Length: 191
Image 1: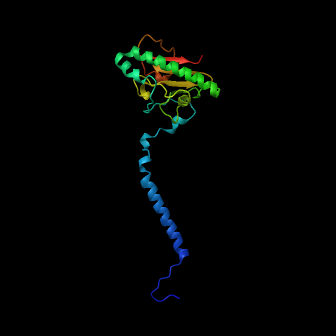
Image 2 (image 1 turned 180 degrees about the vertical axis):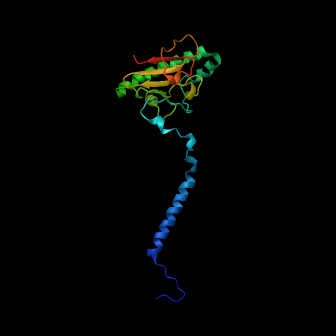
């Protein structure tokens, strides 16, 4: 029996309040600890680029390439030297596409749309080539969003594009509107 100065607490009434307090503490803890990993909206790639419709993707994510050591020399040497590196890189990419199609019964499919080869790892189909060629080549001028390689495929055929600076490498006979900002481009396509 409780005395006149004793406070009685009904545990059944206090339990929901304690659980609510615990939930609030967990939410605050998660918010404070997770702030470093939250990406600002300005840095998030728009979802429109993930649609299966033909898209052109550009982005700041660079990947190292096998021609990286000679890329610095080529950047100093001039456009024709950089074009020679691009030709070598396109050849390596064609070999990777041939190997990829043996394992997957087709090329990485962009539904005919043109994409950067692998500037956006989440969206670019060309990134699938990393399973047979890693690292993927990078344009000698760097910044794959501006100077990179571009890829289009319907799964059965493909075409690869690169910037062309000199006159020694043949110019691509046709180029998509997305690449008309460049004075000239070179290309290779499936046999």
